Length: 427
Image (cartoon, rainbow, N blue to C red; front, side):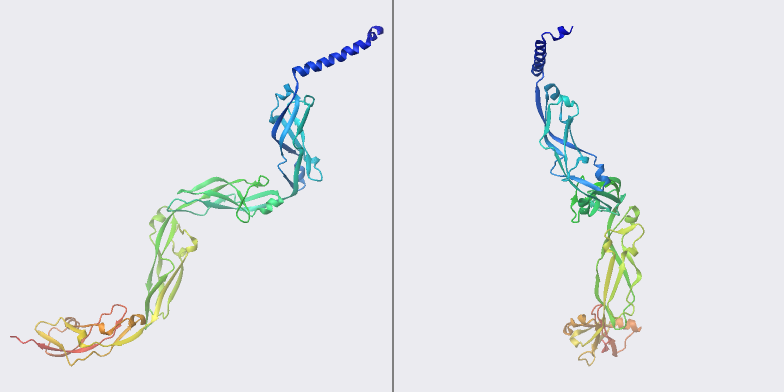
C-alpha cells in the first residue's frame, strides 16, 4: 500500500500544482480582480465620550473627517455589490496621538476581508484640535423684524422658556454674547400665540454664530406676541386761576407734544378720544413768573390703554407770565367821534383840544406796537344814557366816557370828556 502512494510521487505533485494553477487561471478569466473608487466618504469618530468625560471637546481640522477618495480592489463580483454606503472609515479616539491625530481604518461592510484584495484612501489621518469645553446660560431676547399692519403694534413679547443652555468648545462658547429669536411680523394684525422659533446665538457685534459644534438646550422655543390696535389722540388741559396783580399771561404757551399714540383692544381703544389733564392741575393763581408743569401721561390713561412708545410718557406745559407795563397816550379832537345822539339834539365837544392822558396797561411788547396817531375813540351817547338810566337829556354839558378798543391784550384806563348837548332848532 505504501508503495502505491509513493509510486510516481513526482508526477503526482506536478499534477497537483498544475491543477492549482489552472484553477487560478480559470478563476481570473471568469472573475478577474477589478478596482473601484468611492468619493467623499465620511469618517466615523468612535469613543468621543472619553473626551467628554475629561471635560474636553474636539474640532476636526482641514475637513479630514471626509475622505475625498477611497479605492477598493477585489474580484469583479465583489466590486459589483459595493457602493459608497458600504465603505466604513473609522477613527478611534483611543488611538489619538500626541499630535492630536488619529489613524483612519477602512473596511467594507458587505464583504469579508478575504474578498478584498486591497483598500486604500487618498488620506488616512484624521486631524483634530482638542480644547477644553465651555458652557453658558443665556436669556433669550425676542427680535421682531418687518412692518406690522398699519394701525397696530406689538405689545410685550414673551418666549417660553426664556433661558437657553449652550455648551461646546470653550473658544466658541466665549464668542457667544447673547441669544435670541427672530420673528417676522410683516402685515400681522392678530395675536401670535405659541409659534415655534429657533434659538439664535450672536457675538458681541450682533453677528449670528452658526456652528454645529455648539449644543443648545432647548434649540427651539415658543413665542407669544400680543397685537394691539393704535390711535393718535390729543392731550387736553384746563387752565384755572389768574396771575398775581399787575401780571398776566403773555400768550407764550409751549408743549413738548400736543398728541400721542396710544394702543389697546376693543372698546377701550374705540372709546378713548383724548388724554385729559384734570382741572386744577394747571393753576395760575397768584403766579408772578412763567408756569412750567410736567405730567406723566400714564397717570391719566384709562384702563387697558397704554402708550405705544413708553418714552413719550412725559407731557411738559409752559405758560408764560409777565409783569404788566404802562403807557399813556392822548387823542385829539379829530380822533374822536360822537355816536348815537338822541333825535332832536346836537352834541359837540366843549372847550376841547385833546384828551387827558389815557393810561394803557398790557405787555411791553404789545404796548410798543401802539401808534397813538392812528388811535380813535368813540363817545356813544345812547350807551352812556342806558348805563346811567337817563331817559331824557336836558341842554347843557355832561361828562361822557371815551371808548378806545385796543383788543383784549390792552387794558384802557377811564377817560372822560365834556360834551355839550343842545336842542336842534326847528325850521
